Image 1 (spheres, rainbow, N blue to C red):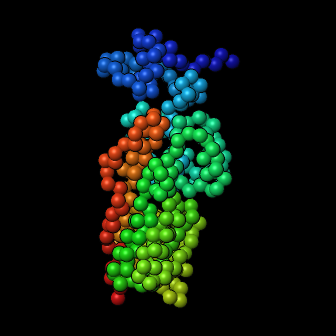
Image 2 (cartoon, rainbow, N blue to C red):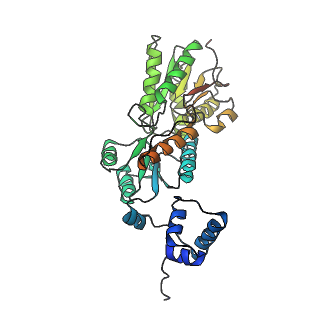
Image 3 (tube, rainbow, N blue to C red):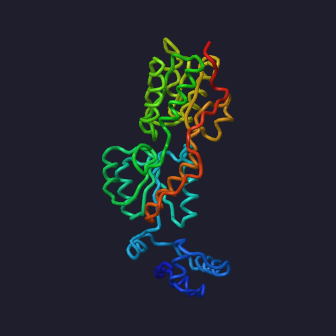
Length: 331
C-alpha cells in the first residue's frame, strides 16, 4: 500500500509561488491585497499543490479560524436561500469562510450546534428556530452571534417579522375581510413575531384571528391542511400563511378541491419568494428583503468579531407589501 501523501502546507505554496509564507497566509485569509501578478502566482500555486485551509490549525495559531457558521432551517426555502446568498457575499468580500448547517436535515439541533462550536468558528449567524437547550449552548459559546429571529435585542439584526405580519393583517382588513385564518409553524424562523403581528393588527380592529398550526414550513404542509381549512363548516374569507411555501401548497391543493383563489378565498404569504409572481394567480406577499438582511447581518457580525463599529445599513429593511392576484376585496 503506497504511503499517504501529506496535506499541502502554506510553505509548499510559498516556495512554489516565490513569496513568503506570511504573504500566502494574508492572501488566503483575505487580510491583504497584492499586485495582480503576485496574487495570480499564489492562486496558481494553491491550485497546483492542492492546498486547503485547516481551520483547526489556524485557530490554534491565531485564535481565529477565519470561518463563520450559518445555521438555517430548510435550504430549499427560497427565503433561506436568499439570506444565505447575501451572507455569503458579505463573508467573501470580508475574507471569511462560510459554513452552512441545515437543521431541517438534523435529528438533534443540539448535536449540530455542538459540532459547529467544536470547529471553533469565529461567529454564528442564526436563521433558524432553536429549542431552549440549543439556545443555552449557543449563549455559552463565548463567540459573537447574530440572531435574525430576535430583532428587539440589542445589536441584533432587525428582521421586521412582526411589522411584516401586521402589515399583511391590515391589508386583508382593508379588503373587507373579517373571517381571517392564519397558518403558523413553530419551526419557521420568526414564527412568534409573525403570529403576534397578525394578532395585534386584527385585535386593533376588533377581529379575532383563527390560528391553524402546522409542523413544517413547507408547501407539503400547506397542501395537507388545505382540505380542513377550505372544506370545513365555515370557510374563511382570507388565509394568511407564515411563509410563501405554505401559501403555494395551499393554493395548489385548493385547485384540486375545486376552489378558486381569490374568488372563493384570498390567500397571502410572507417573504415574497422570487417565483411567487409566477404562480397562478400570482401570490400577494410581504417582502422581507432577505438578501439584504443576510448581507447586513454578516457585516454586523464580522464588525463585532473584528472589534469595529457596526456598519451603516445600505438598504432599507422595512417590510414592503407586494399586492398581486391571490387576494381581492370581500364580497
